Length: 129
Image 1 (spheres, rainbow, N blue to C red):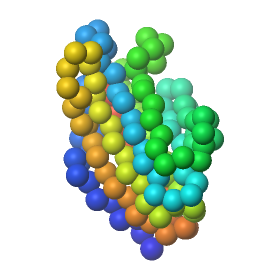
Image 2 (image 1 turned 90 degrees about the horizontal axis):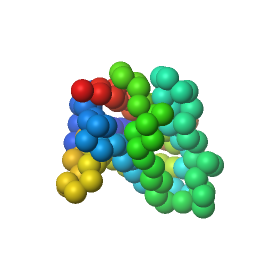
Image 3 (image 1 turned 30 degrees about the horizontal axis):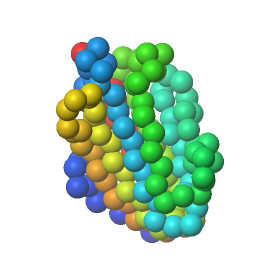
Image 4 (image 1 turned 180 degrees about the vertical axis):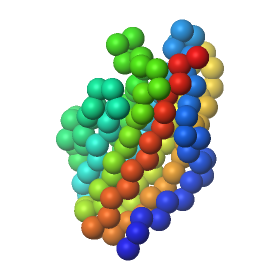
């Protein structure tokens, strides 16, 4: 069975992030099953997080930030989330662009459903204006 991908907010492919204005990306992954299996990686720094890296793993919600630390800022960085459905039948992945004192802007919001043998990948490119 192939993964069913249902976007509420489609992936734009590239997202501009004005780090000079304090903008950063905020990621949320909701896991619909007992143990989330995922890897979040960067084309520049390789693997940034895996599910067991989060305190309290396994859990229903994983949240992290990217581009808050100046050493994270890389032009045209490709960020990739790889999901495994071995122990979860579904996931919801949300990426927001946030800035102090302003409302968050949803960059993408996608639901995934798959069988235990499935994997899915979602990528965005960071553009620093």
